[in-house]
Length: 640
Image (cartoon, rainbow, N blue to C red):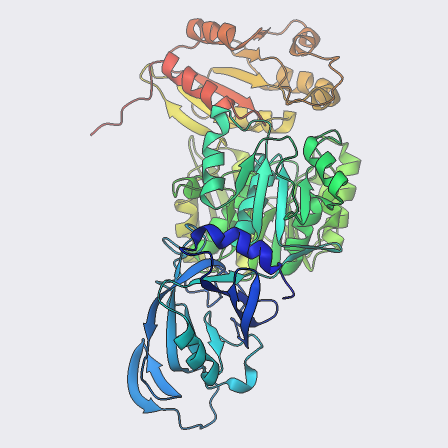
């Protein structure tokens, strides 16, 4: 076989065999062959065609599912060769050999049932409900090349022989083609730091594609990441300690992000075994190249606009896939982590992060660039990265209202002012939402703030380009559920608004505070800076922004800088920022820890105030928000 070695597949499915010596089937999508196997030996093989639309897990995609299945039903016993079946019923009609483009179902049917929850079993992905079969076909001349609408098509004499060889319950493994990352053929990938938002998104997406995934994380036993671990394991990912034990002879590559240091045990294990180490950005670049990809870039708003484009395209019937930097609430409600999805079309929406400069590796079909501000890198450095990304895209949309982007080449420029070729007729800011009017249609987004108007312009511009129509878009905008930790609002029994927000640079903090002003005249802000390097880099901008956005009677509390581990020069603190503020007309304090913070908030937050809790990367921040809500009376009950 050209794909995963037989012994590796046998190792994966052996535990599902009632008898280690019983036969099982392997369909290689790459080789377009079906193998009948016993243990680690092939005893028969047939040309077998999968879908001409590729492999995929979604219903109505007409793509071939992947992963472990079993023969659920044998249909057609005793029927003559080349008998036509429709809806699994014998029509009593034999094929007359008249040439037809239609791929008929002939001779015998082996109906398959998926055995992997979320991959080929369950709502929206169920192979049995999708009517995935192994069957004979009238297009015998094309067997061995992709030709079906999702099923496995064999020549009629072959399906006749296979039918007599297998029984109901026989295991069938549909082996996906490997992902090519550089020169590496990857059918099994291990992620070092798999609980990270970017890494978990890739891990899920690869599992949806049928790739074997394992991973480790230093937060393996943390309560804050328990739900992520549960979701990944539910998709069949093997999660282990970060001690190198997850890297073995079955691992084709170890995936790392910029945050993973050279001393990581998984890297050491890979180097010892000669296993390739691939950067997350190289893996994402490989996936981007396989699809008609829409990349969302910008120093602020990427996750929200990525979510908007994905949800709007989905509502308009475009069935995109998703790789995001933050969980979507709509997907979280389905029991998922929420930052990845496998759709039925060739569209893929990805968040293109500029923080480590690796987005220059991406060559998407379409790019949307939202804004530029100092964050991780200087403005000039970030602009150069975005210009490189745009130059590698077929179509680019750029924000006409951002002066730094004014000279950036673009296919279309969206905006409210400036040289915009795509613009709204008018807009309206409301306390808890925004409205945008364009070409006679009202778009009402249930998120506040001028920055969300900017986000909405970008998303609508892209979705119009990809064929979404106004009325359907308007419904999708109205129903948008947002992104986790992006202005997540709770009102307490003490009539205090508590907002959980991912803001972690001066521009994002200013946008969050501005949006919160629509709810309350007094802001009690809590910010946890993340990383000593980023805090040092942005110290002056933090000080200038805090002086500008906070008013008399507001309060600002800074938690200690979040340290995620690794090598760091700890020569800056939250106290340094407070000291740099000097004399200001609002309360500004650095607190020692969260216990001190809770005491401050209990004394400070009053009815009608807005407590705005901001910070990034730390998975324990949502738990802090829950404690604050409880401290201030608990969630307010909705009226009956």
